[in-house]
Structures are given as structure tokens and as C-alpha cells.
Image 1: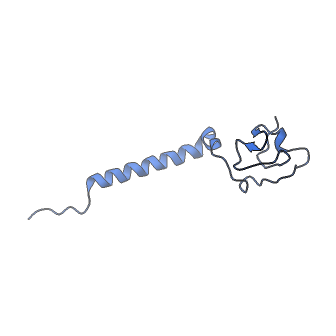
Image 2 (image 1 turned 180 degrees about the vertical axis):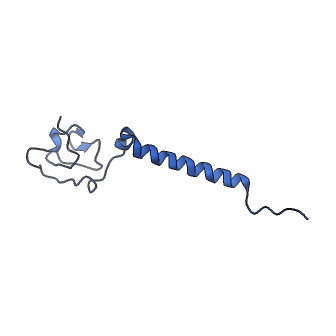
Image 3 (image 1 turned 90 degrees about the vertical axis):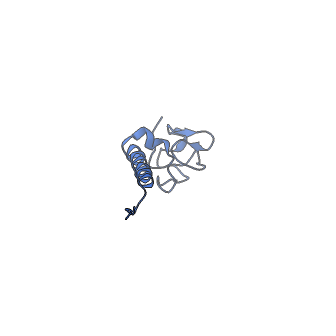
Length: 89
């Protein structure tokens, strides 16, 4: 009587490698500040507002790109806006 295989070794190996690769990328993103910083945050994540916070505003922030872009926040931002990632130039 022939032995019946309940799974495919190739599929299991492929699935395991995909899982390990995905886990490695996730852990790299969590542990590498440079990699994590490359992903733009949503305006909600950074509590963006379209008006200044005291003297702090986007046009005086390091990642701001005139006239209305930011390297760390997605979407259009106001030069007069502010978020919790503010970093003075």
C-alpha cells in the first residue's frame, strides 16, 4: 500500500519562507528608525492641524517642502500648519 502525503513539502517550504520574509520586513521596519521614517504618516496619525501651535508651524519645520508638501506627513499641508512631529529647522 502506498503512503499518502497529507501536505506538499514544496508548498509548506514556500509558505514558511514567505512568512519568515514578511516577519523580517516587519521587524526591520519596527527596529530601524530610518526605514520607519521613510513611510509617510497620515495627517490623523500626527494630529495635523492647519494652523500654528504657538510659534511652531510647518514652514519652519525641517521636513517641510514648500509650497505644501512634507517628507513625513502624507497629503497637502499648509505652511501655517502644525503636527506633533514638528522639528525646528
